Image (cartoon, rainbow, N blue to C red; front, side, top):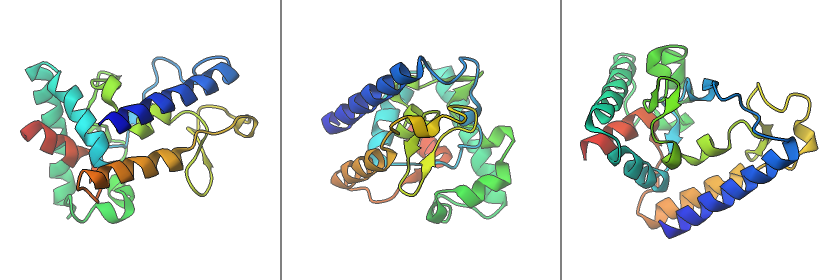
Length: 189
């Protein structure tokens, strides 16, 4: 996990650079729009191990609430023929259409507009809102850096993700797990 924590430190340095260049955080403090429709977002094993630390630190009633949210999402997905195994080929993008815009589509760890595991959130959650290079294009939240994305050196999400994938392989994991299934697994271990 040392290598993962070093990567997170590097990411946070890159985010601070962009904040300084932009004159502050691009996201309003009361916005959690990016946490909606992420219940099927794929997460690597190395991120999962750090996420587990955050989940285990929560009070039992919060963990129970998160487990129930994940279970409800899984129930809806199952009713539409999705499982943890068949959802991953497109990183859960097709499946999110089943629950998009509903409570089941939200990240299970979003509680009252706040991330319950903020210090242990996955890499994409650390960088979304800022211009980032995702391999093929410049991506960014549709609410931030409007008309200014090209002015800033983007975060290298492609490299961050590749590093997470490589660290996960070192842990013996080759597949990502959709968020709701991952949370359910972590909270039942």
